[in-house]
Length: 299
Image (tube, rainbow, N blue to C red; front, top):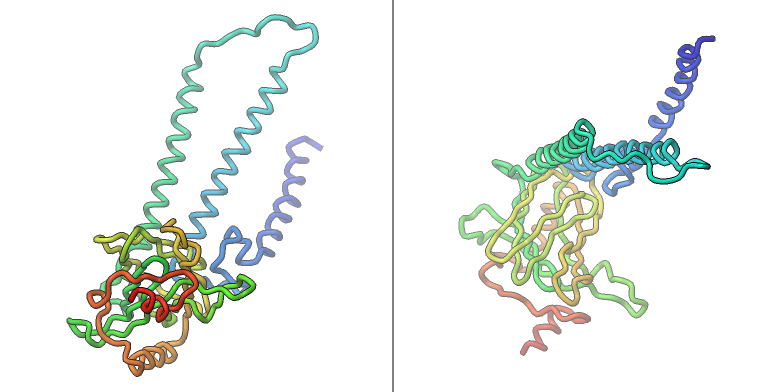
């Protein structure tokens, strides 16, 4: 049998096995083992698929380049190795213009391509909604979070809010989940979150949403997205912001629209209304204390 025919017959089972392997992968495996995906394949937000595709595509490109580079290195080591009986230095080459052009242009093309795909995805992620369904202001502070659900009035008098404290731990060192600041979002709604800082630089990161955004004093950033799967997600500050940075945690609950409206009504019934942006300055959230205890210590 001719060699080409043998190679053709050998390629068929290899291709079939590769196809079966890919089809049998779970959504998590297909997306590079990133968080934000479940077995049924529903992503956490409308942006999660694009971010995961950029991540896995970058790793595939890097792996291909690595395999080629390692292969060429190994080939050079074997073919041009010193053989028994050889002495002295081999023929020295000062330069090879075609190879130097190749080694310059290929990395440049790879870098430009990676930048272009990244810029395209980031532009889609950060494009604001013209008319969001929900507008929220997230305020970072050492070392906790405040969340304000903005209203329709110009002075934000119909807004409601929650003020959080840093993560509390029990005697065994476990974080008490019920004490964490809580951000509630309605599923399948256009969300815009304005990001502000009361003190130093922080970074707003919802892990399963696969995106984070820095928060500065005097410069407000924003993030627009659609949560597409109900559930509870973990959030944290992703910028080293001081001694108790690790305690700057929060929880995100994506719920039905009815549950979301009920939650806002509950905040209004508790009297947590109005605009907190100007009413409150930086809070002293001391580790191991609650908000009330921190206020007492401040007095």
